[in-house]
Image (cartoon, rainbow, N blue to C red):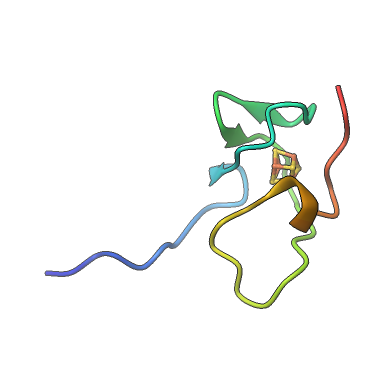
Amino acid sequence: MNNDSKCYTPNQIDCEAEACVYNHSHKCDATHVDIKGNHATSVKETACGTFREK
Ligand code: SF4
């Protein structure tokens, strides 16, 4: 079975924005994120409307 598609719960998003208050060990801890971009599966700090600097 190919389970390659990314399906995530809101607080388990892989994120590289370590400067964000919601980022813990490259996982997003926010309960809701406003991701700018259609069907984004890779979250960049520039693509996230919920980003808050630590
Ligand atoms: S930048 Fe967005 S997706 Fe990344 S940790 Fe912060 S709130 Fe979550």
